[in-house]
Image (cartoon, rainbow, N blue to C red; front, side):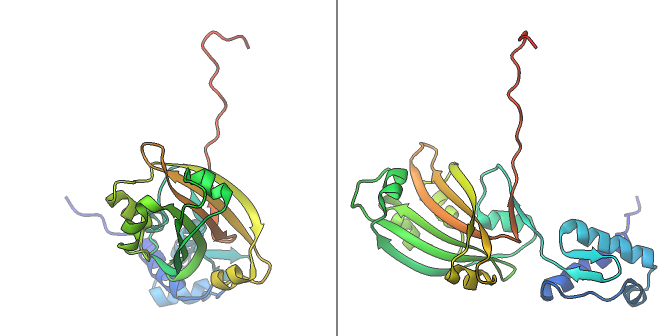
Length: 243
């Protein structure tokens, strides 16, 4: 059987996506006719390729102005996955910069959340998390002392969830709250946002299979790069219930 060749617009879309990754958001792509001449195809084929990039969130097309580079919005769904897994599933390369690691005594709210004794220390890990080298979120996590040594022995610039899995404390559930906040001055600098920008704050209390808390994380995401999606359904009506 003869193998099917890749459509030209798909090949062009891949090349333009590669270029978009190297350009700053807001950069203007060449006109359709210029791209059609470069790739030796029709304008219609170029439009198909650009349409694919629009669907994937890499460009925005404005009538009369042209095609401009954007950045895909990352959706956080109802399934529990790590930042590292989320990025890789979307074809983005995750990375983290560790900003601070120290043992601290948390406030009473965190003490209650983690189920530890008042005055007991926790391990604080502060990180800036990126996708394809661009800052996505600022994360501050607190971990109970029982997993601290395993974390300190691991690569904190990579996935801490992978370290927790290896230490027998795999996060299996999360109690999550989401709200809009105004990012602080330092956060705006780290996330490369204008001063006073909004941010999406997500607070997670991760627990292992036994229900014991293993991580209390406060993460602030760029407002223009992240969204939260949920499937919401009505309660099923019991069989035979009156309408």
